[in-house]
Length: 202
Image 1 (cartoon, helix red, strand yellow):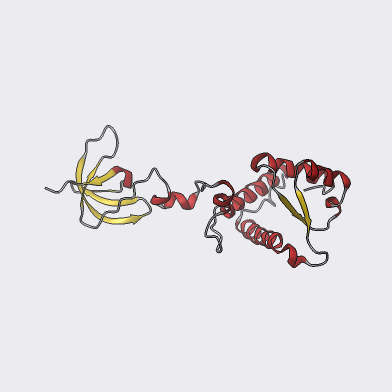
Image 2 (spheres, rainbow, N blue to C red):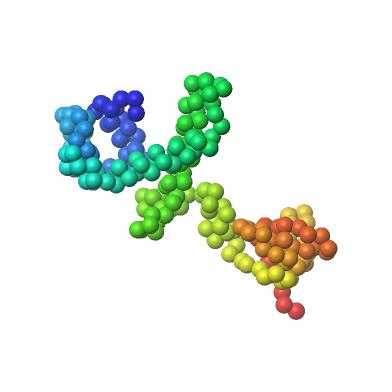
């Protein structure tokens, strides 16, 4: 935030509350904007209880401090791995890169299970898991993928597309994720698990 006065803080909080609704409690440190009369009036209007952490004791605000540290560490790694923008010091380009890194971090953070609850922040907050790079690699995590597994040498039926006929093949090996290597009439293909079904036992 470029400004941390009470007006700016209320504006940011409202942008969050517009998505998730009003919380019952708001925990804040003892910064100036959290003691201003209009900020307290805003929380009172929204029926939100304001709880201040103990002064000069960062540990009492440990959850927020830990979140900030996690974000800083992740963003530092992202910027170290990112291409340098020093050759093209375009301000809008730099801001775009920063926004992309922050969004990339938040996508990962919000879909990473907590070690205590074993649930992701998205599951706790919204009761659903977002589609992301990791879930795309796990067949059972995506309801559109069949939870079938095939063994090496197993006979399967393969339907590559609507215009292709169903043909029989032999599983050569599992390639990982949602793909198998299948021998179809002497040609090795790599169909998706959704294109495979078990061959009926004769």
